[in-house]
Image (cartoon, rainbow, N blue to C red; front, side):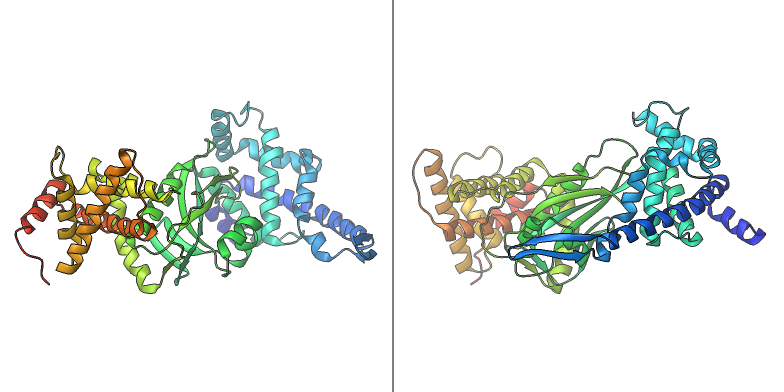
Length: 450
């Protein structure tokens, strides 16, 4: 190695001995793998494959893509723990064993019961580290030739992984019934909306792909990145909580459609770490019957709305927590009456003071009209809707039957949404629940403008 190249490598890498020995091992191994790949291709291309059809048998040759796809993985998988049979393995394994970076990695693995004995790392080298390194190199290089620049990229990633005590994960919630004009919307540095590219869409299972694309080829996700301690059990709760907050905020933003997420996919960003996880989404319940859509202007307004609401819904006062829980739970309701009850309970928590037991229907409907009524006519409509809702609620809880209809429940649900949004905005500005109620009662003596 020339002095200039050695200086460059020493500057880039902490463990030059491990780099040199791995490089030599890879150079010789690629020559062997390349020869094996040629034999595999010659054997595959020379073979006739019989395809059975309705009209009889059809003989075809293997297509090159059938050889290319997965060949890298097949070769590395076929090695299993036989990496010691390749030339220069002894020096390479010795470099691993003497590496302080790798010793730290083995210590973490031992601490979390991934391996049994840190004094004998050979099984971990052959069963874990080398397969991952070869697979990553072949993914980047695309063939079985040795390329020093590509190898340096892979080794740099590997060193960074060894140094890290935490691993970065990425979770994606696949949105259903959603469209936005922007390809990407960043809510926070580690929390974004974005569209999947064609390859990512193709990697979705066919049922999920059909479900979320519909008439459009666009698939939207909420994406969360976060770190977890290396080798500990993967828990995606942090991402799931974030996704629930984002969907709840979308629903508070405006009555726009039946947005939900179908699945959550979680995987490590590092190619040298394992721990994929898939979890289910929300129940497929339609209420509004329309797709949730945001144009560019909506996207900008929602970003500002998120800044306020994310702080409010993360750790709300008890009164707001009850209202948020009921509003959120109403989207899982199949029955119109159940959705009405959730809405009224949320409105009671917001519009009624603790301990108020008299004239509750009057107080709730009047305060709602004062908060949301933009004119005398609109205020009167809201007041009557809230009175009827409270009366219906009383009938239902005492075992009676009602038939208020979808449109009424939908309108009440929107009143609940608007009420929650306004209370949370006022709370964010520093006004307590008691102060908001007192302010509304003070307005009762002032006529609403026509």
